[in-house]
Image (cartoon, rainbow, N blue to C red; front, side, top):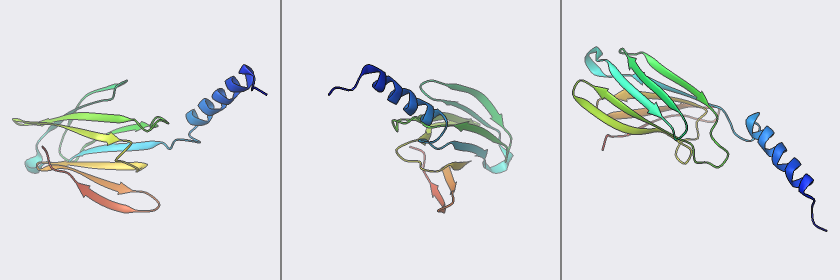
Length: 131
């Protein structure tokens, strides 16, 4: 017996509604802090394939916050350009493959960004170096 097209459509609609309601995919709260020395201003410009979050100018210890739901295919990617003084870098600030945090706090430092993960199950810090 073949399932009817109506059953397939209802199943897809249920999957979509569950995904949008956050039942299948958790919500991410992403913060990017300016932790540069000498109270240097940080200019960031973050994007994904679908969204351009615009240019942000952050004073020392200020932050930029983004809230989103990763897609259910595990391919969500946000990348940012970061510039201060005569220095400019790009960094993948969120990738579904690497990041499992629901509260992701990044400190941008001269030698690279550091991720401070704070979830129910763990608290950890991971620092990356610029390429």
